[in-house]
Image (cartoon, rainbow, N blue to C red; front, side):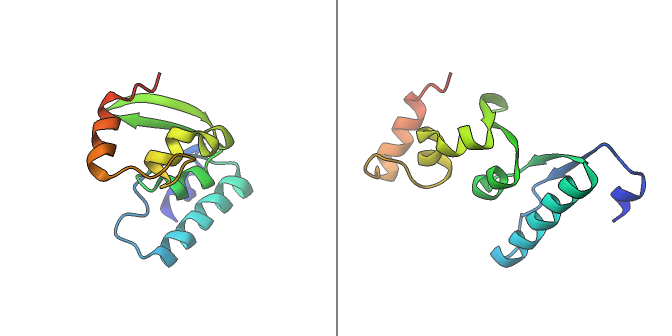
Length: 111
């Protein structure tokens, strides 16, 4: 509420889903999307829940160890096999065990 009173051009949201139930997270992201669309306010969203973040975003950046390792439109990121595997819990390949996944992540070079 208060952030909107100043009619900002951009609002920074840091982990808006942290500690919330899945039902509340859906509601929060619905409100974020509505404010963005209805009022034209840019939302800079920092979020670990990649599924909700990518569905709410028009464009996204993926960071690892404080560095941007991948960026693209919502559709590019949602369709990227590495993003699916590491952040969305899927992909075309067979599921790897946690041990193998950790090893693979260390070897993987994004860019």
